[in-house]
Length: 186
Figure 1 (cartoon, one colour):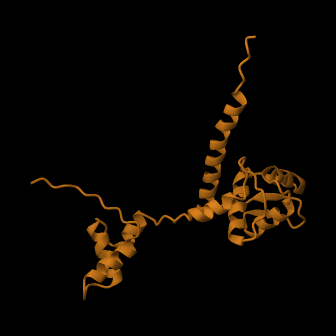
Figure 2 (cartoon, helix red, strand yellow):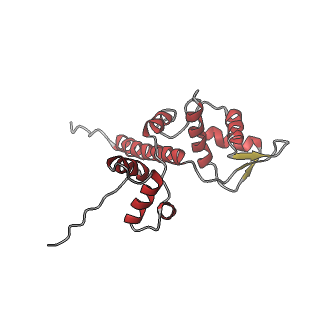
Figure 3 (cartoon, rainbow, N blue to C red):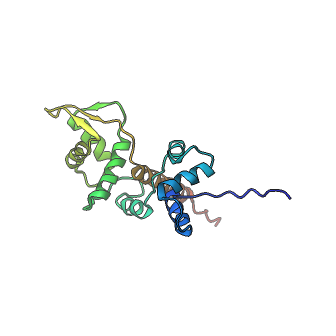
């Protein structure tokens, strides 16, 4: 008899181990169960499994959709969110659109920020980026620079969502512009 290969993807090994452990009365503890599951998958122990497959952050799609409402179809920031978490996601988008390894005067960085926003409050955005440690400035305020840091996964998902939305909006605009009414032959 041939052996059928059945693939099993477990989104959360810890939760899987808890359920398995609950089904086995007087079974091993949680950490022992994690190690047994990891060994069954071909790893030395749970730490080895985790080192080979680092956990991927869960993306909160509702939060991404809420934050995306603060941007227009061209990807420009429309209004300042009152909730800090949404505001920080929006600030990450502005940070990602700033050119890397470049320095600006206050006037120059304000112009770059104003291109990305509709509500034109570059000073507030600059201060917030500095508070989040995404931007630095000299003590005299004469020189601003983007801090290179790994992007927050939620913010990366928002940026991707906005890029898809912009891409979807563009073909429609060109199709509308290309439509020409036929001339009558009278």
